[in-house]
Figure 1 (tube, rainbow, N blue to C red):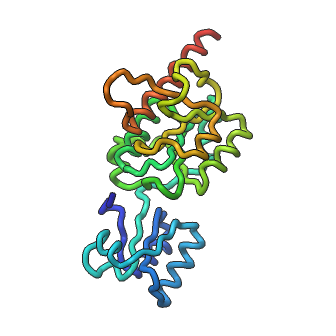
Figure 2: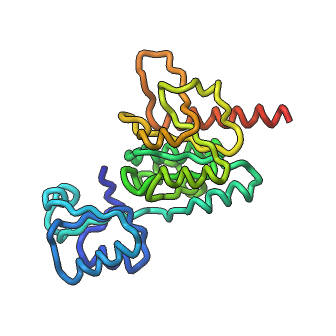
Figure 3: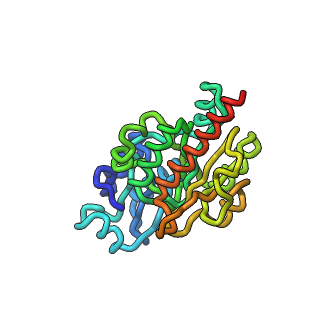
Length: 251
């Protein structure tokens, strides 16, 4: 989905965006194009670990009609990304067990914005998304978050499974949402927890699911068998909230 406020087209414009320190989520370059400016752009992309796609001219024309793209189109982030450590630090500063939401292959910016909004309301300390197969922090995401993007940090990682394995070593348990799982009310979602939400069509990827400690299902009693990703995230997040409240009452 193209977000016109988050697109830079043209070789010099993209190169200057890199040099100005802008966060570029994804870079599209015409396959086979070569000149000194392109070489400089590629060096900057490598230095910044930018997701890079070599594509045909028809793809670039589709994103930016006309020849203004000069063989280069970049998607920039409207907000700066946090780090996973910063998310954990946010939990530590509040003296709370980490509560993180991880998104696997959620590419719609409206969904991402809505998830950020509900995550903030539920008190989640942050969101983790993969570099590929995910919407970036575009202006559309910002609008859909209703301002929550200013308060809830979002980290972007190269490998979601590796990140989960590293967080497991720090005592965080993971529960992914899937209709074939255990009813969420029957799971212990207290303590340090990360909930994983997958693509609406495909769900959570196989490797990500295997890395999770629990598979949580949300009861569905109607004729439709699946929920919008942002709705599923909100429901499961508030089950975490409910269980945390009940646990604190017992204490």
